Image 1 (cartoon, one colour):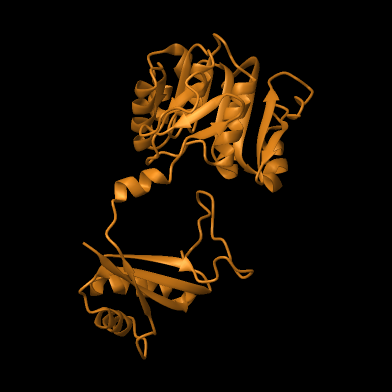
Image 2 (cartoon, one colour):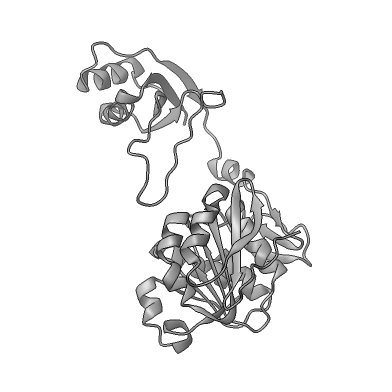
Length: 314
């Protein structure tokens, strides 16, 4: 089977309405892109939880609608334009979308990822490049964390550089569970992971089983009510949280309260320009400094009870 894409360039004010109208008129799927992508006029849209962009559209937007190859594309565009009150149907171009082996195509986009000195994240359909390395078998999925994002990479590199043999580790905002798994494979003792997303918890448990590591993963309420006292109310030798700046600031008292005396806190999901405000939010509890930076993101680190900031990575 094959399809035809309809490509329409249109002003921001009409992009979302036209997208919805195209779906009503018979499009199989619709996406909105920045028509200036790849040029000096490109404008990224992003936000943090509670601060998302009001509209997923750009001043100069490109609406792309997928249709059956034998559909009447002109009729679909005309019907959609009329339904939102446009005086005339906008100009459009079409392009063929050939039938593909989508599974193989998707898999080809995810190769093993080398992180730090000795960590490999390997999708299940690949052989491990170095069987003697620390191998994490992990397929891309619904939960955040495959090692490809700079913040995940920074936290993994910190865990590799600071192994916690026999010690307790808490991964808050665990996503796929990748950081908890690194800690466990580096020799940590009791390891727990927490996330607000039930799908992330399910994914993390499946990943832990696949990688033959014993880790307890919880939703926040379940964590607070865990039959394990260490998890419900205890403190951890190392706390790692790879989230985003705003929630990290709000969680400063809670996360700091989970660190054992002399224990460490490592935070990422923080843009370099946001580092000072996160450091300030944690200042009443723990002294943090920038451990490392990668592609505009930083990892912050501190030791509870220490008046000095740990040295940055060389």
